[in-house]
Length: 379
Image 1 (spheres, one colour):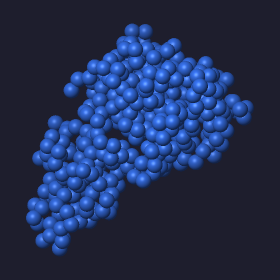
Image 2 (cartoon, helix red, strand yellow):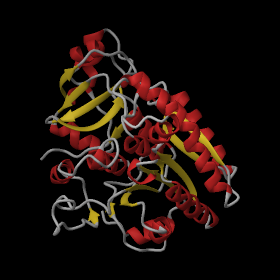
Image 3 (cartoon, helix red, strand yellow):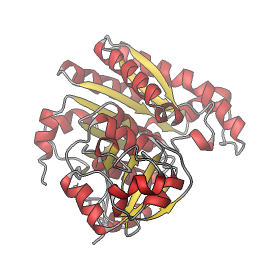
Image 4 (cartoon, helix red, strand yellow):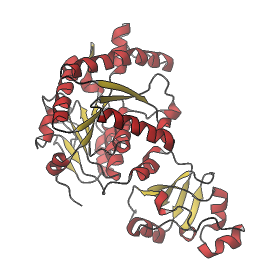
């Protein structure tokens, strides 16, 4: 499957723009010039008929400047307190930047557990859709004030990917302090070459990203590649580009080939399947044979007991479970049977379920409507 990035930008109607800490902050706190530039560019894109959601870093830098703290503290409560102070300053600067163009902004703070519940997931989506319908620009950040490890997205690259999937965005644009992904570290190698297009995120791409220094915000280039892989698996392309370039967003939509373009792996997943695949945390793993993997991936079939060859974890009916082929994760699904029953019926014909369990609530262990394919078969 091939994609023309110019066509994708020309046909896009809803985008997510992630503003990295590397461009929105400097030694003295927030970089007001960049915030004003983003406000102007986003306003111009809205004038063209696009809907734009912002995912912005910078709360920690804004808070540290306001309080007068020069060094990021190690203690979590102190970091959360600094972020709480900084959020007010960050949204104020965005408010002023967009007001220059007659536009309003809204602050949205999220934690990952807010998206695991289908009801809360849809509520967040409806709220953001309402803001877009009103012409208000959502400025989204992780709720660092209350987040703990169990409910953190981990970084704003991951958060931006989740928002792109939540809101059915056409493109995710990740603005950072580097021109894109290079074949070697451009800070050390003057001959480093920009990789303008990535057809698929492979092990080699992950390796290149891992060798790029982590000065690029919280997660560095590695988390950006993971974000590209996540949205690409759901059918959404992503671009990494230098956010300090004047009019970078406008140039991208005018057809200028900037940064690194990550082509999506497949056509877009339906919204419910996106939620299953990327918002839920797996409670266990089901290992399936090659026949089941091919039936699911290429023929749109459900997962039946006969195709299951192994199981990990303990979980109940309706739990999100990862399914794997040859230790390669190929998707997520909501199970019709708990782990104890799956162990009893795995490898048997559907007609034998009632004989084994005494009842047969379902033919399928995972129905295709509750199953999302996100990976590829490991040949």
